[in-house]
Length: 289
Image (cartoon, rainbow, N blue to C red):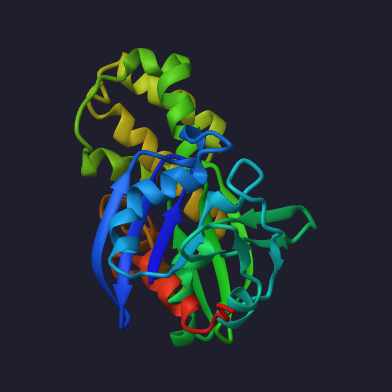
């Protein structure tokens, strides 16, 4: 089988067999870089050699199933587990292989405001059969905090932390006191610590500028401090207790682990290739005919 994680900015494909990843390919052909009539040709161009080698099933997840993707697939309501996801796959016409898209999930927050996700449900899927009551966090541009009960996703909360960081970093007065540089863990930690203090996020943000102006925050560390401040406020809002299962890139998960630990919860980083493993889990329960 071929598993595809097709997101907004990237395309990742995995050739899998017997629950294992045999090969992988990654390209920058996310849905924003693919024309409306170019999805099938792009897929064939990337995984063509695997099709020629005999693969006949392709399972895709992510923004490929969004309104801007190949085909809009309706959101599946929570609660939902691997079985519900597998039963709700949508077929896409494609010569030479059976192609299916995993639906995203929808929920509402405590005040009835809609919440959605596409792709993250698949990254969690491989963990679901091993979890009863749990919380998962998927850091990113739109970080997701996911509630799990009895092997099903019961709800989710989204924080635009990554996107807010990029906007503040590039398009506000804060950018004037920030220089390019590597991630500074200590500066990130100071931002997390600051998020626990009184004043609120909007007040804390201006402090990024004033600390730089008075030499208390080196410009090469300001971006890391800002990141810690935003992630810290995200964790404060969620107030996690017990274990938090982190799913994402190692670098980002390590930063979130620091913030989560600071606030007293226990971060547990999920295995790599979460999307591929989730697609494998769903494919094993899917009906391909």
